[in-house]
Length: 287
Ligand code: NAD
Image (cartoon, rainbow, N blue to C red):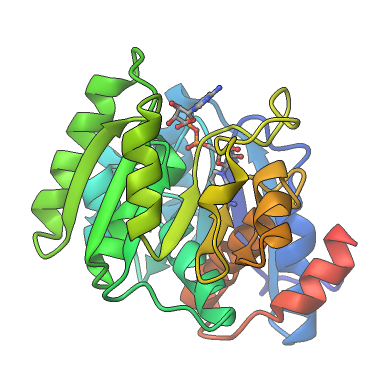
């Protein structure tokens, strides 16, 4: 990689970041497209999010991806938010538009784009969304903005519940055309009924990743049917127990790794206007 006096910097901010594949992914794309850009990972705790955002301005960086715990902490220091980022108060991509720092959230776009690559649009669809945390909120606001008809969210009735209620109220206000409801994940009769009526079943809980890699939120395999589209946000492992169950039942599935790559591709498009070669990156970094 050639770095010169004209090279523009981009980066990742959050902590921990040492394990991140973002530098390899973006630098590969910069080289592939001949962009005089370089991407580094910066370990930044939430208390230093403001200083990191100021550095984007001072160093004339093209932008930055933002990961935990800075997704909310960067917001007061930005100039503008997209409607999706504003509704869920979470930014994962900052783009420097000639000195104006715009906060985006590409997780939801990554989800819908990953579905689109499999020929599925969310517009007009009924979605059952398992989970109400960060990933679920990003999916809910994007699906609602893209015209999903109904989103039935199922979360455990734990300490997280009041926050889920608040998040969903903000999403419903930002996208009033979509009917969004919240239900108890442990109410199996209601869950079964909602899945029977929906087009897309989406897991956005931590179930499926360690230490829950041997678990699925769906324990009755008769709830899957071949015309149900089943998706997961968990990307490690990409073939979660729920997706394996769904494939056995003949469902079309979309994995969390595809979503992860598509959210990165959306950030790359925002930075450069170019299309990331998603399959090439998947083979390069996740084979
Ligand atoms: P979060 O902490 O904000 O939310 C976690 C959610 O999981 C909550 O709804 C919580 O109630 C639920 N949950 C936790 N333990 C559970 C259990 N035992 N049973 C049922 N529900 C349970 O986390 P998050 O940031 O939303 O991340 C959730 C998952 O999404 C993680 O696996 C994360 O790696 C993944 N993720 C993937 C992408 C992607 O691009 N593919 C993007 C963001 C997050």
